[in-house]
Image (cartoon, rainbow over all chains, first blue to last red; front, side, top):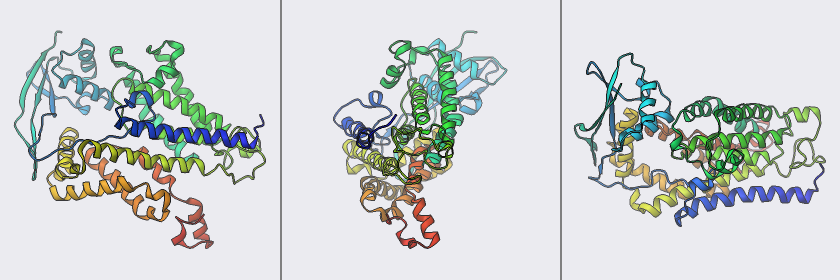
Length: 152
Length: 291
């Protein structure tokens, strides 16, 4: 297929120009309220770490999850103890950290991923509120949040 | 640029995307919320419908094949277009199961612009065979090693990186104002991620208020002025080491691996001018500014 030089230049200009234009829209449209990420991806805005914290701000965002065995032993819910990938771990961590009722499919994923031979009878979640101070984040004691009984 | 971008994309395909895809295919169907581009690309299986596992596995193998042929330069541009489409489909599919992360998109863009560049002209099967498979984006009358379009993808990627940083700083300033750089913000982020990901360095850093305040001020200056590199290439001597150090530090502390962004920095390196300086054709001090 032979393309005229002028047409080739026009085609490439349109492609390259569109790439940059879409990025500009995704970047700045979001500031104007456009929900760009899910509509424009792979053109997206980059708002990482944009929220400001000030001294004394509570950060009740850090959860700890344990798998409770029938012996009473508690295994921390981590990528390593579950032998699980980042994506699935992040999904399950977010699901189990909330106070919503877990879906049956979520529980099944946990049980499938658990590497222990022992029976898992429950999932317990805790949280430890943080507060930012000049000398660092002060961590308070773990606080019990909820227990999800598993039916076997 | 072809070896760098396609090589990295192939690495990502086999060592990141493959694992994530396997995980995504095991996640509950209820949480599948396809991105617009995935709805469009997978429209033949139903608008917004979950594609069968076999289809996504087939896309993976298509990506592997087209990525390999792009890398060796066999029907380079059409291979790159297919590779780009497959990578977007795979990565977008994974993101359809959760929140969007910010590192991969730029790789898709780099592949896309590369597909419209005469990148198969040199060190490729196409050039070895002496055949013009790339005439849509390349002139068969051009010389073997030079093209007026060769610099375009590199330039677009540079502008793109500048836009990414402008987007990042605009989000910070519009949400939090200059008060964002108060030290506490980064202390909090270090504390949260340090505890979540078990990073002792992040936890130690979260206790260094004035050091982090200085770091935040540097981030604001860096992100808001990075675009100057496009007009004053010599600033690259300052910005490139800073940028690389910035992303390495983010990885070491917050465990956020922005390798894809760091890849773009390597596109700024004027390899030809470095070679010319080694041969003595130009001065070393002119490496970043010589045409």
